[in-house]
Amino acid sequence: MTAPEPFGTRLCRAMDERGPLCVGIDPHPSLLAAWGLGDDVGGLERFADTVVEALAERVAVLKPQSAFFERFGSRGVAVLERTVAEARSAGALVLLDAKRGDIGSTMAAYAAAYLDEGAPLAADAVTVSPYLGYGSLRPALDLARANGRGVFVLALTSNPEGAEVQSAVTAAGPTVAQGILDRLREENAAELAAGAPLGSFGAVVGATVGETGAELAIGGPLLAPGVGAQGATAADLPRVFGDTLGQVLPNVGRGVLKHGPHAAALRAAAEREAAEIARFVDSGA
Image 1 (tube, rainbow, N blue to C red):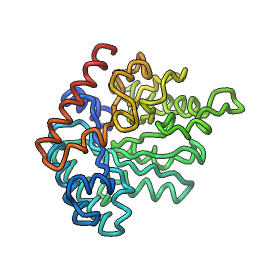
Image 2 (cartoon, rainbow, N blue to C red):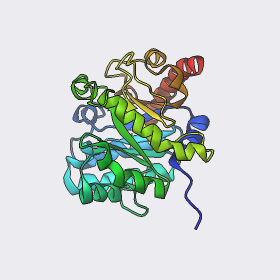
Image 3 (cartoon, helix red, strand yellow):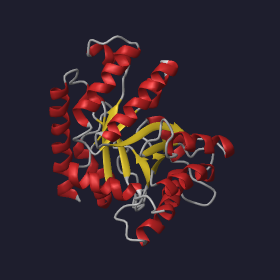
């Protein structure tokens, strides 16, 4: 059996062809209302369908936020399943923002839910939390590698509260965040040694965090939330990411989604964001 193409290779190609933009599918109650939709499963479905119709053939990555679907129970999860499948079918890579983290068989079950071939919620990649210890992520990391999928690990997040954990100094010397980044660099080494342009194991590093002093060159992608509603702009990216700009995947949610409910307006907003990001990434990379 031929080994599946690694996620990092697929992501690198998508970013080259479509530009380095990830758009969130974040059906906040306020956005549903702004679009004239009900805060119910019908509104959720209309919202998600419109974003997929507008953007799945154009942007590199779509990132559904699982929580905004889960709050509607089983019917909301069914909408999420369809959204993931339809976005992938239309050509976008799908990063499911679930931020799962647990130990042992429970982590293995989370991994199977999001990274196993044929699973109803199988995405191209998933976000995970390492704060039960990096080793607790092993089931997800191993299954992602086996199935050509990716994992993005929280490292330096865009929320201000994150620093109290992520900037703490470990007994071994580096900060908690740097320890996670170092482990991800090791995780990506085999793919890079085999000639892959980008590893499949990424870090979440907020565009809002400023100059971190961290070594961000992990050989894999750097998901950068915080552009737009959280206060960062494309102009902040060179200061945060420096020499690793070529591996950065900026995420924009409300900055695009607020322009709905019409698909054409969403496409135009995404194109503006992509052009602004390219202006700073291309000049700084």
